[in-house]
Image (cartoon, rainbow, N blue to C red; front, side, top):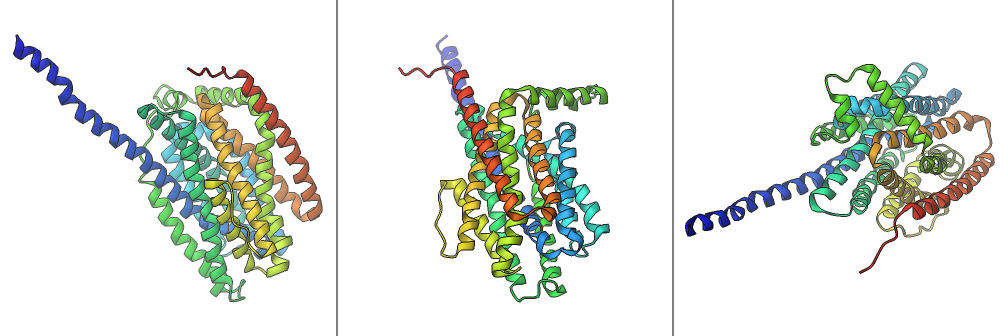
Length: 411
């Protein structure tokens, strides 16, 4: 009798150790996936971001550079409508891997830039961008929620921390990529094969490593209820399209999403201002084409600093100072915007992140198409008006969420 009791009491002691090891393994797996995802995006976007920054200054004939970017983000806008469906069908990991191919092809097209290379590459990149960013938001938020559940942590805090790490690492792509641009184009031979060709070849090698790194991500099984439903064998095309339509209409009928849209649109406007207007009308006349690299490196550096500590060191040159301020604003905005969507729309992450990219890319596309036909001062005025609208809508959202939240009780 006594021996039986002793054996029964010993059983929990034997099973505790494997459970503890399994929990530590999950912790390491979640954090490892965030590290891999962040590093892969850094490698891919340090090349693409630098190439994008140069479009308005290198490919100026018939406005090829800005027009191709307008086509890219217009394609991005349309494909973002179905991106959530594609991500659910493929799975977030596969969507991330496939998405990298578009960025590689776009940079490769810059080795021989013309209407027959950049335009098709831009159209395909629009599709790849839509699925890679919806996949990124879904994968990162799902990983954060799993980590919070496994360790009984506050979900919002974990989502914020994981997004903070990702965007801090991601922001370095502007710093590193544009330093490479500055180093290779600093000899004053921006248009020669020794300059731009070498630059884009180096970028292609770097992006290849990023694509390979993406393959080491763990698969997220059952990221959301919608993904499980659509990945089943009985999920037909009609059911998938019906789910997609419901996801998009539900998001647009949600007052919270409607209040976030002006903020999303401003974030896109702020980014395109830096990529096209700032580099063309402020940086290039002051310090030349090769100076685009150093100015955007400052932008990227302060972007990353702002994400981590929301403040930065001020440079001595006016151009670098302006780039730093823009970087700080972008760093804070993108981190908080992604975390906000992840917390408010946890029931439909794919739909929420699809809305983010739809409105962002639509704004960017419009500005790229209009940029050759409107003045720099007009763009600045549009930015100021959109900033005021975004601020007003966000304050309204904050009040609405505060009223809906139950009051906290202190013991």
